[in-house]
Length: 142
Length: 362
Image (cartoon, rainbow over all chains, first blue to last red; front, side, top):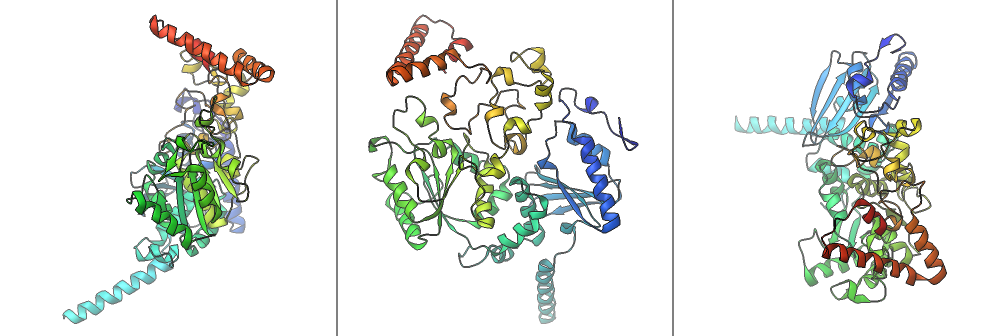
């Protein structure tokens, strides 16, 4: 089975008891279209994996297909979050966990860098304030 | 948290980073089945909200709905939800008791008259106050009093939304739903026995960000109750191919085939179980091999056997309906009495009760 020449892992092999929903290949095509649009028009795209019915094992097949590229970032934000660039540069897989390390959300983003990975101006302002206080305390102590 | 500060201000004061907030907004949008494009809108709106007062009344219920919400494993999300509201009265969760608790309710109602959200779980008994009172006040009086100053009412669980199990035949307490008593306020029904915790929390967030959600003909938010369990079920391809389990231990059951013939109510039940799932997204009844009972639908307890296929109406239900039509409720009660007598006789003689016997009673 292939989609545009891409090898697609066998669903039957990864989940012998689960009937495939048939959503895996269309999902990969949606990613292909989104990547094309981003390259040609700079349009970003987000897919919420929770909104798509996937049989047990199908999500694993999708993750296997997307693979892991050059970036793997772990964020500590009210529980961990994991952001990896897949083996298709510009296609990112974002997984949010709660503090018990259970998955609470999973998204595919097609963009240059996912927004949540960038430094946030509000946090930078608070950080600047802390740095100024630290320096002022250091000068007082000295 | 002061009620005068916005949620954004409070979170920053507590050292919650912008990234954490964005994560909360992303997972909330996902939970509310909103398109990811709405994430920035939720973030912008939620940041500016001031905490509304929430009064939670519990009537004829089992506390399962509160258990559902508070036993959720997504502590981060629910903590943030509770940061966005001021839960001013909730029998089970509040520290105060007795007259101090009732005083807290009355004060919250006065201070926030016209603006608070009233959450109700449990059905309301009929005219006999003896079935359920709180601090000597009948459930009906307390509901009417609290509803008068509410901006909106959220009926949590099948009991508050539709009467639920207390209303099941023969409805000994004369139980009714919230919407049968209140006609002049917006009511959002969040049925389920219990409802999915993320759905309870999601409805509250949706109310805070976008106001009243879009509702279906039964007053349920379309975002969570817009699709049937069957529409979103991962076993649906087997239904389409005509592959069914015929018993709980046959080859079809082992292969994960469709549970329609075992009485699955998925095709007529509207809820988010198949997508949101339970126990922190682990699975849902059908994934565990059991048919959907249809607990989020009105009168699910009296809707025929849990184990008869939807397309095969049960003889007993037909008979009961005919009798009820012909001779009122007496026939239904008589059928119930005969079944009870048979059960008692079975117990006395140590007879084994089979699935077929259980079916006769449902």
